[in-house]
Amino acid sequence: MVAGLSKNTASLPKWWGTLDVGLAFVLAVLAFLVMAAAAGKLDRKITDVSYHTYRVLIHEIFVMIVVFFLFGDRIVWINCLSGFAWRAWLLLYCLPAWFTALRITAAS
Image (cartoon, rainbow, N blue to C red; front, side, top):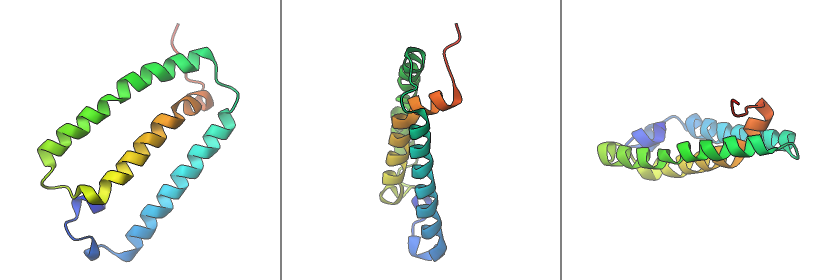
């Protein structure tokens, strides 16, 4: 996020890049651990809740389009778009596993 707001990323401390990659690695490892913990435990309720949540979360694409139009000249998209995109994909891909791990089900 910081790189996307900075017009000159060379001015950022070198450790920011290392920190960003380290946090991305930790996020990916956590996602794999949650998916491994939830493997084989998905049921119909979790699948239904995941589907309904997907239907809500896909609106983030429209929100990002609005952000692009409103703040596009202030954000250096080349520095942050790939990070936003893979984190959003990872969230949506692991959503059923997160719901299973947290035992989130639809209220009956």
